[in-house]
Length: 173
Image 1 (tube, helix red, strand yellow):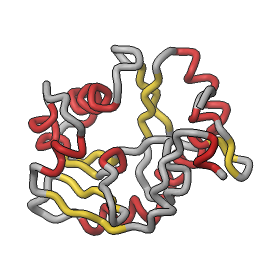
Image 2 (tube, one colour; image 1 turned 90 degrees about the vertical axis):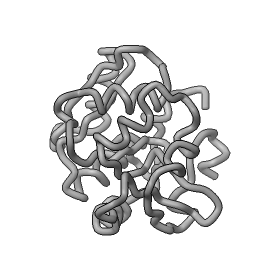
Image 3 (cartoon, one colour; image 1 turned 45 degrees about the horizontal axis):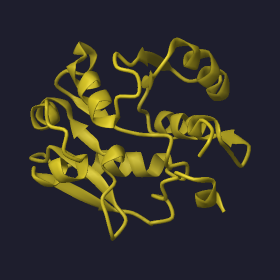
């Protein structure tokens, strides 16, 4: 994109703020946000505002990628043995309704539930069982789409417009 996606504004709100508000509205606070460098905390924090319960986590490996970041989060004792809602700023039209639906539809035997747009799943928006998913991804660097498809999971069908992943300025047009 040529700029930090987290700070791109849509309808007057930064993409990181939109994601954080959707998570908070779905009662998923505290929201843990991984940042590459300490300076990001101030910049992103000012975009989000002071009203949300945010826990800032510094990546141990800068720009390592989503699988490493998820594995690192799952190894944190704060995330042990429960559920973790994955989210990324790349999906600015995701609302709290999606996160609530994932919570409501997670099957008792499922390792995770992933939104699907009719063509593909969106693993970076999955609701995951932390222990089970750590066992799956630990040391495995195949795409999450592949890894998540190999375990017991559910899919939540969602409008493709909601699951539009913003990677370029053209995606916003």
